[in-house]
Image (cartoon, rainbow, N blue to C red; front, side, top):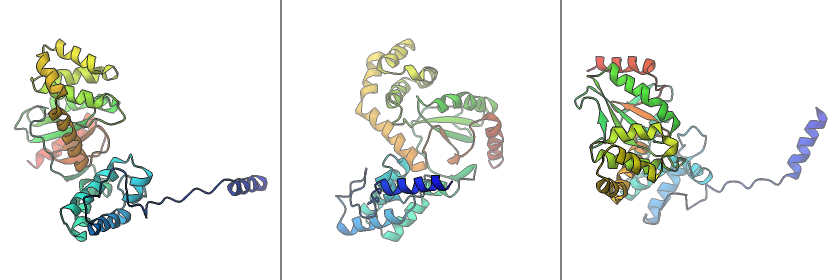
Length: 289
């Protein structure tokens, strides 16, 4: 035991010390462009980011997270929120309140709750199934190459069958950077949606998520009898790229950090996507209607 301890101490003495992170002094943070802000606004933003904790489950401050874990979507979303508030000439107390009231921060303080406080999500024009006037609206943020999203499909379909008159399911795009063809699949689904064939292509892509690429989605679109010149035009249109980006932004603002994530009448659900777990929650929500 003593010999082991001695060897560990010697190793620690030999290894070079790791340089301390310089996030507290950093004036440039990954993903943030503060050049348009005044020096005073930049100071407010830097101060708030250095003393506000990232809600992603790590002990880092937002500025530290941007420097040491630039891939963290939550710290990027919240840091951008702070920057935009400063650009809108909000005071430091106002910015702190905006930050505290954001769905991401609230979710971080409510991890033990099954349903969080409701948030507003734009679903205008989004594909859905179920009655348009349903009492319960479930919004799903999903990724066509996510294996967990594939497993969620039969559970959500079973929920719609269990509550055929009371529940509708709205689909929102949330392609993850880790899935190379997910954004392409999102655009393909919107091109199919423009011709009323969102759900057939949705089912086909989830059933063949590993085979998704440009040629396969074109082949599947032909299979469903879509007008191919129109499909390709929408598929490649800048407006379709922008629509996917808007869904991503909507999800980030609402507190989405992984897929699939669902919201029940605007309330983020933090449980298993399982019919047995969801049914009593829907039944309870209906009691209040």
